[in-house]
Image 1 (cartoon, one colour):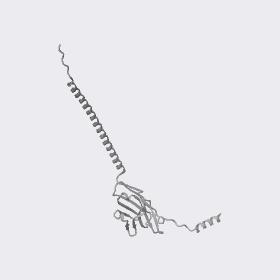
Image 2 (cartoon, helix red, strand yellow; image 1 turned 135 degrees about the vertical axis):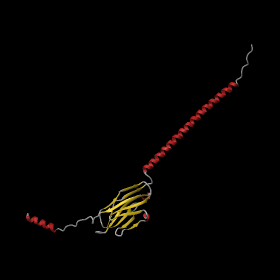
Image 3 (cartoon, rainbow, N blue to C red; image 1 turned 30 degrees about the vertical axis):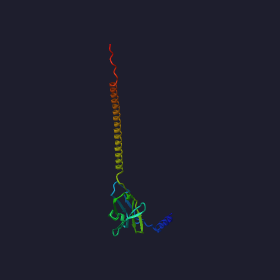
Image 4 (spheres, rainbow, N blue to C red; image 1 turned 90 degrees about the horizontal axis):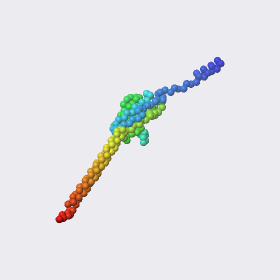
Length: 206
């Protein structure tokens, strides 16, 4: 029994230990919020991108649909940026390594898309890590407000319809009354004329 225990201890000591995986070797990346809905044109949206690593080399912002497109790249060691021409004056970055906020401004309906951050690491080897995307939806007006406008228009059209129907009804009634009265007057006039034109019998003499 003692000999078996001795060999087990010796085997454990002689077995090479596996290298532990640290946060730096396998960094985590985060992006918030998951979705942004803008009800007006020319609005602004902010995306927050961060990582647990302290040694990223670069940060990309990419657009997913209809095909992947690079909008922004930040070379972190020198703090230099490259921005897509379509977002040249509409994209800015603030913060420091390793927590950045990307601001997209003057957004239009065509900017509705999925946006995601991608980090570039070089340690322990060249590695790209993509965060979960943020869906940005840009609308021209609040849907509830649009529904209220449509309800108001339908209500006004209904009221106009009712008013026109009521007016036509009143006109028809007035015309009917006028025709009845006119017919009655002509009938009375005819009776009077008929009475005046009736021949009178001469009175008989006794």
